[in-house]
Length: 269
Length: 136
Image 1 (cartoon, rainbow over the protein chains, first blue to last red):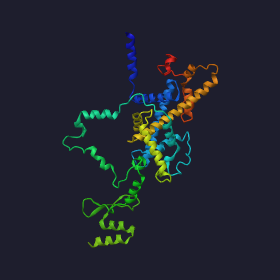
Image 2: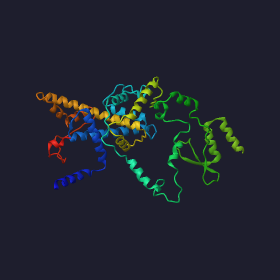
Image 3: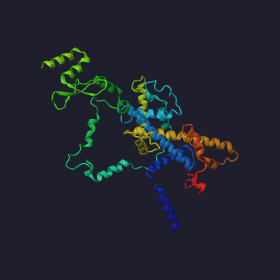
Image 4: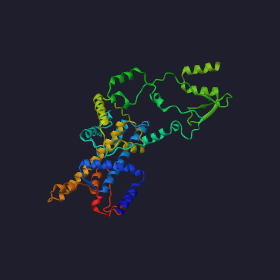
């Protein structure tokens, strides 16, 4: 009678692990599945943990590299090119064919690393993970559904404020003004006709602004003095001048007749 | 650096091959589950709603681990083929395929990971109990 109790106790003691270990243990299961598929029958605990640690570090390094690539291209979402660059960076150590001429050819996606991955997908049998994993997001959503009052506003928002706009109706704002799309969402990747995309691109007159932008001015205390952002000063500081002086100072370096006539017209008024 | 993928001569072939590969990823379930990959990618700051790209990362990691493990297996076989030649039972052959730190550190060194391991760990609770139960 006593023995199973003591076993249970030891089990519960093993289960109380820090939360970072949960993902590590799942990775350990996946890595041991891969080791078994390669041909190993058994494994040392330390060796398996080392390989698991290396695998997690690989994933994180891949992510960090992809993020730095996408941030360098001033995007927040990573796309296929960022991930391809990241995979290239990590496989440079082992080397691959075409690594030296990777950036000479225009097509980054022609690389042998991606071909190797597709060969790997074709040649390797699927070994799905042992158990389904519940997503953290789904759990959170279920908790939110239980209290529908908290769906729109958090506890810090006072009740007399109007409700937030519905998140589902936000799809229109995701599309860009000129109908451009991200490359990975374009029809060339999704397998539709490429010609349609090119026609669109040729037809629409791309990045030209519909209207010429006017200069932005603003008054402070309104007594004929204006704050100007003096873009020709080397120090890049605010200078406070009278209106007409600033106008002349702004227009002179341009030296176009139109600009000067504009200034004269204003003075006549 | 401007990596424009669409300005190549043979872009149609590349695009079709690539789209086929990405489409095949939708049906392929890697051993490393999507949730795990999403977790680690989110930990390092990646925002990526596309399932295909998550699968791509999973496949890349799986390939990496499989390559390391198969290299370790080759090291293991080579080491044991040189030592044991008189006992060729099939059972023992199966038993001998054990992933050890020695082979793993050799194979990881080729991938740029230097593993320094001690011969004997004294800080693990399962160290001195039973050598048979230590193997998983």
